Image 1: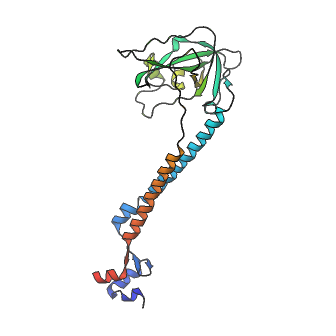
Image 2: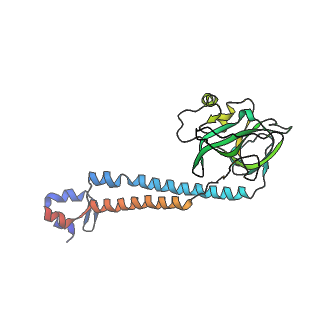
Image 3: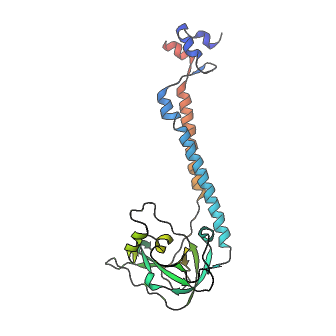
Length: 267
């Protein structure tokens, strides 16, 4: 005699439409389904997303290693692909343009607040892009007690500079941006992008910024840091999300299956 034969007649039709595994029957309930089963696809999707982020960090780590071993690129003509030059060692020759120097506010160094000094270099050369401006981040200067920056003198004459190519991006939340806003900022800017700077000057601007080498005497305090891809962190997060999905699935199945004998006693 099978377990279904022990079911009272009034419940046989109810059980016959349900999934049966030996003495266990699946019983659909709305609350466990909404609380436990429904979030499972979300947990899995978040785990997959973290795995994708880990792959991105691996690719970045490989890119950093490869580009660190490449010889410096001399910036003369206009750069076509800024991302391809990012993190590369670069060199440039020209003259600083002091009237277009800007200071980026809110930059911290050694626990103190100050400014990054951005000075455009008008490139020397006779080819395409001759006379274009290359933005040079010459490092950090502190604020005075009244909040004003200390002086940031600009070297004169022809200079040959070395550094690393960077592509600055705006903050996640921008309340006031665009070319018109940048023109109104004056000398002190809240953040820097090449597009914003290009909107305030005439002529071409290189799409990368040089982070001036700490060994160069034409700058200020410089402790440039490269991103450190943390692949393990994303793998850990992925494991957590997949673990949540597994726990939710186990709890859902436990609450959704019941033995026939237990229902008979309740009946």
